[in-house]
Image 1: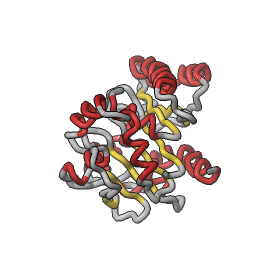
Image 2 (image 1 turned 90 degrees about the vertical axis):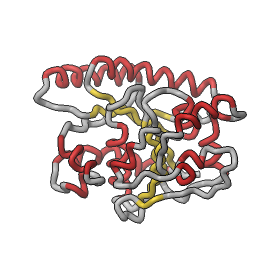
Image 3 (image 1 turned 120 degrees about the vertical axis):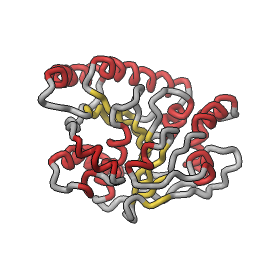
Length: 262
């Protein structure tokens, strides 16, 4: 099994999960580590961010979670980077999640796959769906660490505390040993010009301290993220001088240190 498996979790859509997953993968790869991106989201966000064409179900995570999976992972190179590979998502993952509910060891299917048929990568990053269903339970059971992007609005901030509680309770119910640790909260899509963003951002340190969770530097809001994804590229490859490229550095540094410590 990979040394580090990071699930990028949130209990709402549009909070920057895929943006964080993709750019973290790119940053970690630049530190000479191999990264696998697993797309558990039926919306297939990583296809767009990684410039990949939609794949047939038998070449995606649908196959990995199927009963008859024999370890023949289908991985696509992202941006012709040798150190970054993607197992794509598919709309049928929604049906797969429903099937896992009634399957024996359904909650542990992804963990079982990674254990029995390990990937040769240093880090696996799981881009999770926006709802806390069976696919996210699978991500939690497979993960060594969790990252939680937080959009700077009241619903998202209150939801972060609920998500932490869900992770703790679900880990206990699954009897995970060791339980995945929460690497930190990642404030996303921050706009200094918006008063509400400044207000909520100022409240995050106290919330993170209360929950005993690290608070990472904010990921700024920029239309260039959208422009880059429209070209199927990370911001680093689209506009490598853009200051937002540096926003992922501390998280990537921490991931590499985790790999070294294993």
